Length: 135
Image (cartoon, rainbow, N blue to C red; front, side):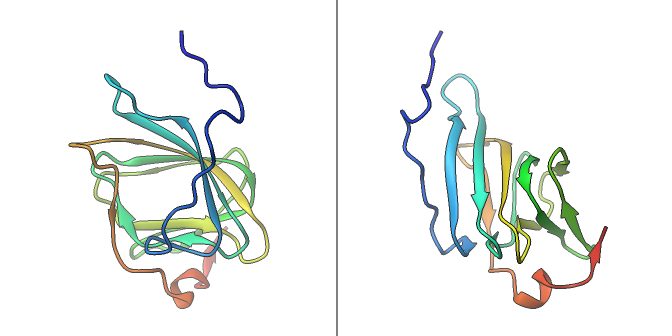
């Protein structure tokens, strides 16, 4: 048994190359051998979001608190609320983050493939972020 006590692992602040706004990662499962599964608690301040990206083995998000948004290429932006779970298929080009006026925290679950969990692309424009939302 291995227990990671609350506060034992410091928060991480990802590169602005891949995120817009203030974002914090708190590790839950690090994907230690032999498991390639990685789980992060990710907190986005209002207006913060990822850049466009894909995951080689897909990604599951589970919203814990706040209000979020998620976009998948060619589809309306979706509003996310606590208790919502989202699956992005392998290779699906997408982004996610907080709503413009409310922070959001989600658990991000992904599997490493050849040591890689994501392929990062360009930043999400304000136009894409603020586009018409599906409720």
